[in-house]
Image (cartoon, rainbow, N blue to C red; front, side):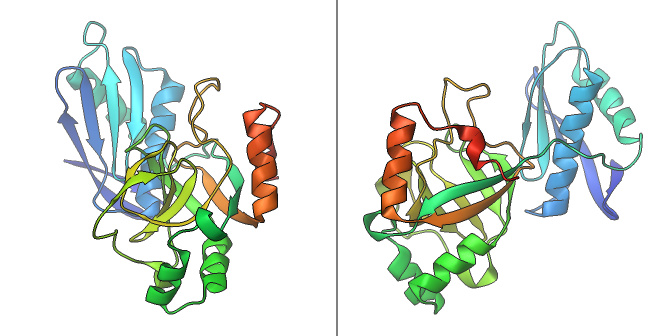
Length: 249
């Protein structure tokens, strides 16, 4: 077992074969922003090094899954090469982006807002203020294409998932559960608390890449009225909305 130093924190590092075409590089345990930075940094190092045979990388909360072509390289070769990359010094600046995502926290777009307020001892307005005041770190994408797991939610808004998941959660729903917040990229079942909705499409096959966010990005939510929500939604439908407009300055 090796170790790396990131932001003055030492993470255990393990290389684990994942079948015959992928290698998992575990960098620690749990959900931790510093650990996530280390995972994203490793993906950036591998991308810049253009290691032969690497096909795709999938960052998670605590590990990086590296898919490779077994006709070009091997798990043993990648283990040695990745270890050498980690010996090159501390984390470097990655090309993470900051987003300001409009979200409506009103009426039928926020079906769980009143209950969340009651269970956390806040008013609905305070829940909105707390949720919108935080800058969220994108830890990973999963569950649905482009679905972002983002943290860290203010402590006073932590709630377990719903006891009985919904059969249908509308696309764009802004949700919270435990210490995380997320946006449902497609209509699907779901067990998180729905406190708002954004008209911004988080996954679009006509974009490259299709997923709006990537691990390491930062997201803030900007409360908007229902009227503004409907206007932006119409612009999205008419393909007249400029997605770069939600990139923070």
